[in-house]
Length: 269
Image 1 (cartoon, rainbow, N blue to C red):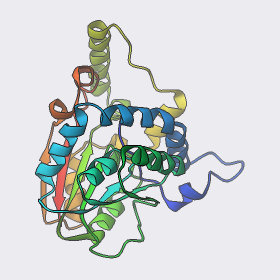
Image 2: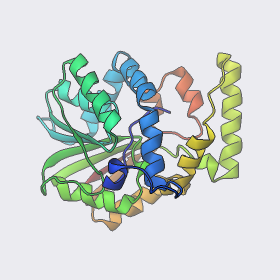
Image 3: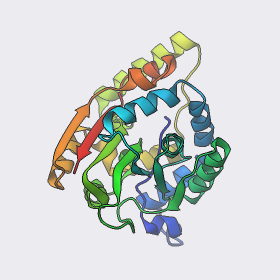
Image 4: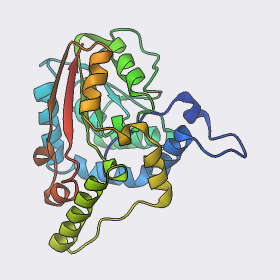
């Protein structure tokens, strides 16, 4: 799976678990994405030089709600894919992530692409930004990693300008770990993938599976859960596209991610 991450608190940024105790969800999150930085950056660099660059920009343009120059925040930027795209479009872009290695990699990628972005290490649940700072907040494959989505969604609303929007691109990536029916559908899609492309999708390691099972969002049925959460914290308008995969996936990904289609949630303040 490709995509951005965030969701960890400053506790996770500052260090691991106390000596002699088992790592908690925050520590697992930080360890997972620190270890995955190089591989994820390689994916992002391939995407930046493929049809996906234009496909994602088109989706953002059509749903951002403002045709002019935006003050945009990329939450959970990872290696900087969305941040780079938006900066090269002429927008003023800030990008945050909780993982130091991701921020360092994003800076290198942005420099390579000639994109000017303000990258920052930050907690997506409680930022230091002033009220009503941003026209647009964007995230890709981030919200499944949130440790407290109600808190994060409320925080994002606080730092949005009036009429500002949040664009959430995500999927039920790990639902198969909690639902036997989804697991069987996933296994069929993996069999189809191997038959069609003569290769196997790599399995997660035990540590990666343990991390995913510890994330509270992974056991929830989404985007229905998000819809309710966004209403609870007071967004004024909410809409959803249940499957954007055919616009941003290649032939292999359409099979690989068939059981967990990517959705787009649009929430307006």
